[in-house]
Length: 90
Image 1: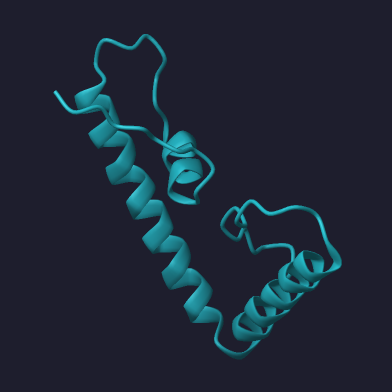
Image 2: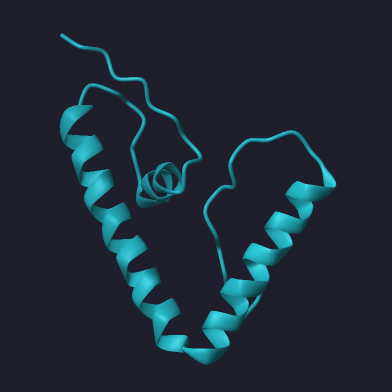
């Protein structure tokens, strides 16, 4: 279960012992929750998959002139906080 968890991208902070402890604690708590309630992981995974599906559809709709195909992988990475968007007002 520990390797099956794909947690969100952690907040950007300088490397420190405190950050390492935070990440370890976060992974340990999620691992414990999955052992106690495995259906929780399944429901969260389904929610993430559905959000990526909807997000990819929305981006494809609004960015139709871009030659790069926006996939669920891109949308999932954006949902995890790995991509930062800067929207322009028209």
